[in-house]
Image (tube, rainbow, N blue to C red; front, side, top):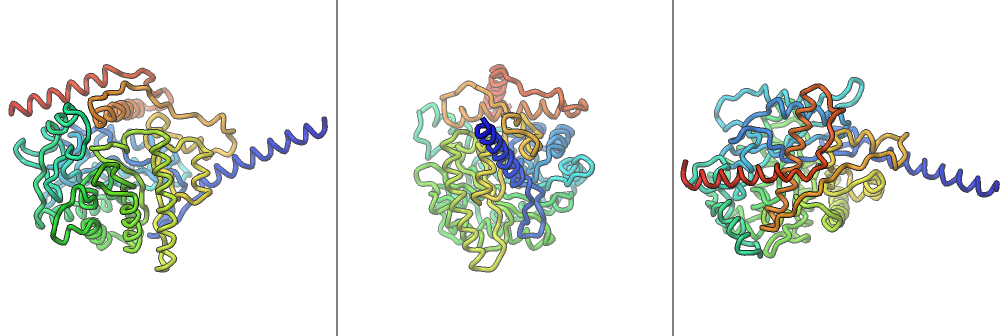
Length: 468
């Protein structure tokens, strides 16, 4: 009897110790190479919000309400959704957009967004606020991409989205309708794009952001230069990392030392002729040698194989496997050059205190990125870092069961994106009304929402094709 009681007590104590250890490492601080300290290891990574008017715009009250909610959630870092540096290369039409180069603009909306992202409760250390700078390149769609109907998007080479898709005829037709053949960039176009990124970083700095993230994943422009399937140039920009290097070096020249510079990279393209894991690791090695970046986020996929939109254990296992190798690589290079290594940020499908803490304990990543759970549970970090909560008391973020559209991988993955966009708008609305306590994610499949989105897209296609 006594032995049994002792055994249960020991087991209970060990469980408490493990829980405390898990919460302790998640809540631990980390120093970045630039000298800025991240208050904990959890990052609300970028998600497309779809809160701007069609045609893009500056931060509005919905953005401020949404990001102020996350600011109260005790995240270590909060990263905005895509902020497009080119007004003529929008993603889905309702993007945040950096004002055009050379034209006067009002910085106040951007300053309000930075302030909202820092608006933590009194006595707490605010989250770091990063602006994600993005140029979608060839993935800017027809009709809602910010251009005249007859103007093609720019890309490193004239390779249309969908050329590498081994799917049905209907799927390839969808890609053909949505995406034009891009115009190969001349050197002046490349210089202009570099200036647009530099301009975006300057705006972020002046508005009070703590840093920027360069979106070099998901098939966007930086990735298009990096991947052999989209870069068939024969000039100096045939070098896959030159475009990224020039952007990063230009930004570093104009920002203070304590300004975070992050980059989001593909672990692989997942398509024939695309970037392989080995090539991506070589990129991580070279980027580390530049000693320009503080954080390297690991993601993957593009519009031809949108793994970054999907979820699942297979995807997470691949990203974790790559993050392990990337972490070893940056440590090796940093030791060789006697520099501080960039932090590896692992994003995608990691759920639960134990699994997050395990990755951190094993040094497989330094930061953990959380996206969709942050929408349905904006204060998730408070639960994960609460030492008094037993594991069973930590809520599990709700994940919707949504219809699968098998027209194409992109169309199917877009359904999930739409649901979370609507939920972000609902969350912002509850915040505007003065409370997020009443907010609960919609448990219904929201078929009518999906239907409305697709009918709206069809209407845009019809209007655009008729030139109305």
